[in-house]
Figure 1 (tube, one colour):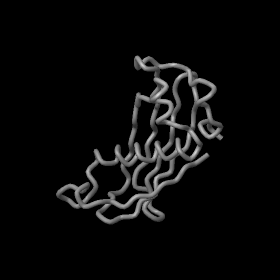
Figure 2: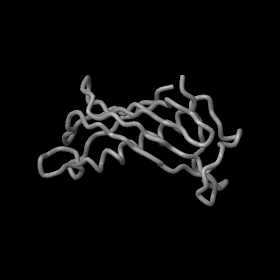
Figure 3: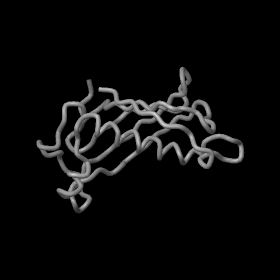
Figure 4: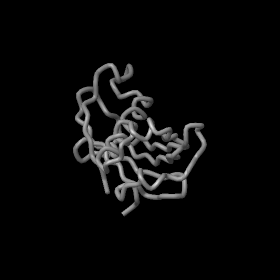
Length: 131
């Protein structure tokens, strides 16, 4: 499953060159990961209330082209690997036909102590698995 969400670049996210500051891409990717969870029916607030959460273990980002103020962006997120306690997601940020950034994100499911743990069956959703 590929989840898509959109956002518009705000002026305060840009640096002195008029480009989106690299750190803001992390916020865009986080927003899109949350949207993926919603799209597949994963109740993240419910998981947190039950004592679970997710940690980002690794992010690799390849910046291709700059995003600019008022750009309308589409962020595509899809699972590409699923392990016992972690998953790897592919994320891409697009402006029209232009790929602006590509990321590979490793996410671990954790218990209330922050220890990686297997995703309980009641929280598992088919959309979390690679196609």
